[in-house]
Length: 211
Image (cartoon, rainbow, N blue to C red; front, side):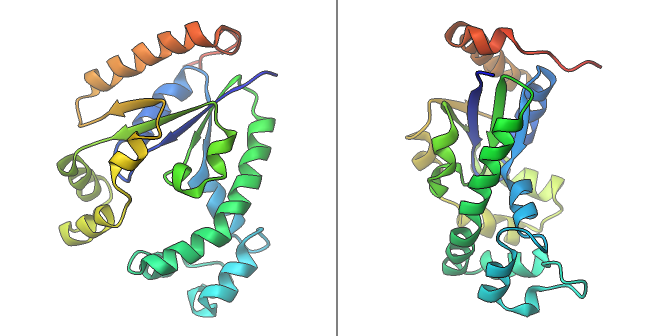
């Protein structure tokens, strides 16, 4: 099967999940790099032993699984620790992502990865890169309302992410999402129409999801 692979990225709380839901309903296969990262860090996963060696057994739960909250507290307060984790995990996520793309039953695959551009390897799998952006106020509101974060933590997490402009400079398409769903869907409809013209073979083979 000839596939069109779209890399979807954007900083935290820019609304990527809303876009993924729209695309899935139109028949796209969705690959979530964060879920792949969970899999490679499970006991027996490709990155598990290296992560435990690097961060110590104190990050483990009693059953031997990695306590993602403990690990998150470490890496989100120390950019060097975050970089160390990513060097261990990203290559294994790339390998698994490549396998998932090959196994996808749809001719349109959306690879969603918050670190798509920074990781380097994953972007090589993509025919196009789409970047979702949102203003600071929208990101802050989503983190507080949807994830229950207090304002201080939400501001810190937004602040340690790479500037959105750096992602925009590498994008084939930029989607602005500051909260109005009708505006977001209008952008997506226009992109969909353009994809149908540019990639008729892949787009004509899509089977929309049934209700």
